[in-house]
Length: 300
Image (cartoon, rainbow, N blue to C red):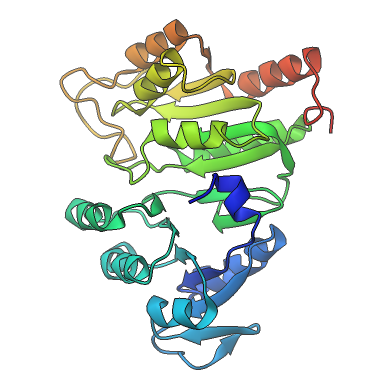
């Protein structure tokens, strides 16, 4: 695949599995408003009909062959993710987004093994968005506009807060990827951060993390290794969490003391990232930084 933005600027066709579901119907207008070119839907019961001018097919394979689509968005329940994802991968999609929460770990591992070179985002994720170009998921996008800040998050809700505070300060988003809150996301946080930072529109990267796992530590290592060369700001939550029990997300669990709040904050700060305690403090600091060093994108 080409660099993500360059590839997406070609406006690849998108197949939405579950387009005829309540979620799919509710999200269609928002997807289109951000430039998403939905060319087909998948609905076993309504195959052969249309929804708002979009043809519905019995399978992702049929939809891709008929339309040439190379992107799939799965609005399906967790128990249906495995067969739907494998079907999309077999059809040759290059980008697959899986928002569903509660996907069985073994199902996720099977999908990951089959993914090959396909970029897979999720599960338990709000999706991916490049404002004004494409939206693949259900993150709130009504107030988003293009801009210089890249965003990578584990928690959907927390990233919504961050995006709102940035929007209230007139700051736009380049690329936003929600890697999801599961134990083993298809797209690791470090790879997502490097992918977003590689967007030529990204001048500053925001990481929204939480306790559990080592994703944030891997981002810190990427800074140290010189793979992330844009300034990095982060907000980590879970400072009061103790013990080895999950907190909300399946991946928000500290095992044997690993993945704790203090360790994540220390690693990020040692690598040169700026760590914040609240979304508004983060947004205020970014606004001040962009104002102090204005650029073509930052001044828009």
